[in-house]
Length: 190
Image (cartoon, helix red, strand yellow):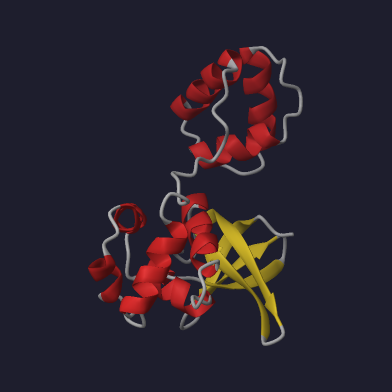
């Protein structure tokens, strides 16, 4: 199962981009091509679509966007293309608020969504779409102090979370978390 790709964006197509990871170019569909500037080194969160009519990646700039997409495609009648259209025409926070407030008119303004689909999205997702976080911000004081120190050094939450996910020892001191994370992060850059 693919979770994310880390590399440099090298190419844009009509509705997809290519990210090169260790010499291999991965093509992925996306809702907004401008989120993936050519030449940018970045993480792309991946949803792997595999059905009899196709096998491809869908890429997202944030984990939250990926999770909202996964929720949307779980709704009856909402396929990958329509879910991408919803994301292309929406702001994630506004979309979540529309679901929370049962605002069918918001969804009806999106191309391809009628009243019936708008109602179905709200019925299926109300109370289920949460604010996804990149990491379980635990009660581990050393880990969180190390996170803040790494952020002051210029690393993003996403990269810090990826580094922390690779540190299996939960009993590290603040300095040990920083040292281990820096070793991992040095291969990614800021």
